Amino acid sequence: TPTSQRTTTATTKKTRSSPLGLGVGINIPAIDLGVDHHERSLLPHKIVQACEGYGFFKVVNHGVPKEVISTMENQGNAFFAKTVSEKQQAAGPATSPFGYGCKTIGFNGDMGELEYLLLPTTNSPHSSVSNCAVNDYIAAVRELACEILNLLGEGLRVPNKSVFSRLIRDVQSDSCFRLNHYPPLKQQQQQPSSSSGWEWDLSSPKPILTTSTPRMGFGEHSDPQILTILRSNDVEGLQICTRAGLWVPVPPDPSEFCVFVGDALQAMTNGRFVSVRHRVSVASSVKSRMSMMYFGAPPLNAWIFPLPKLVSTQKPIRYKPFTWSEFKKAAYSLRLGDCRLDLFKIH
Ligand code: GA4
Image 1 (tube, rainbow, N blue to C red):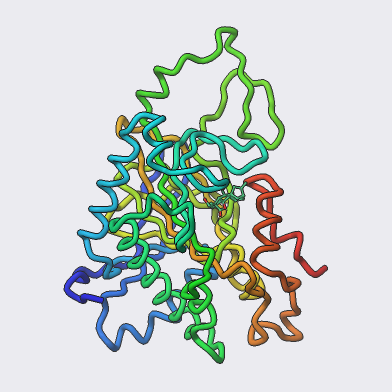
Image 2: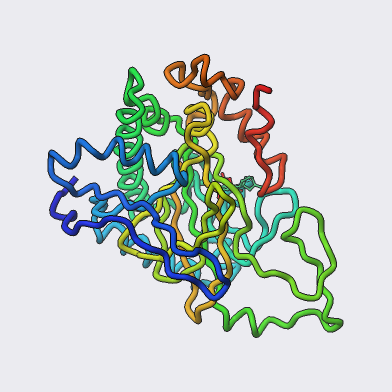
């Protein structure tokens, strides 16, 4: 990784308080990967702490070249600027869940105020849109994800520190890449609501008739995979939920990456790390929000189970072993906000 990309130092950042009264100023951990040899030895412990605390942290001086990010961002913006039929065409054949989508999330009625492009990262017939920008970006963030996962392996003192990273490095890894585009406030205000003033709120688990639909960009959920690496433009919207149940806005910073612990990592760590629940409120800005996520996943046939090192008499085993394919099937059979790991809990 070119260390020239890693220059500044960052500690923790206080979140700004928002008009919604969210986030009374918690410190979101910021991990600086651009540190010297001595400070680097402290990183495994720091990252473990962040994963135990919020299941979420920011990474600064990550080493992903600026041009790789900006080229991907430009292509993403150009994609969303197309007409719907052009987007559908550019995305190639929509083989669920991949391709271009608008408002629908999953297959069980979840909706959000967004449009998106979901791509597999391995070679498959659906990856017809893959181009150099996408491939370069995915390769760079996968490398970053592996670096973080190796540090986690070290921090947890498991016998093989690559126990997590090898899953997403595997050529058969089921990792995917997603671009989300949230419309700006102006556009939503122009959308006519129903003439009666009553609307169906499809974002709640059961459709409810309401007068003021809470407009959610992407509803509350955890990511099913091992680790998610998110980068957004400078438009706010992302919120994370603390273990105490407090929703905290994450100030956007295009120069950083956000890292989320996923359900599979929660299972492998026997619940020591908890997958962070997060959501995206609709942008309150006149500019649209665009985020790019790499979801690092195991191969479909890989077994996910609590690592023996993290199971003891004091910490009895909490999850049954499952294959990634089994878990994915469960995820798609449930609603976005459901706690799918509960299906694999040992009581
Ligand atoms: C959340 C994380 C990723 O965006 C995603 C999503 C997927 C989808 O939109 O198709 C899911 C959602 C996500 C979690 C539960 C299931 C699957 C929609 C849904 C209801 C691509 C993923 O892997 O899981």
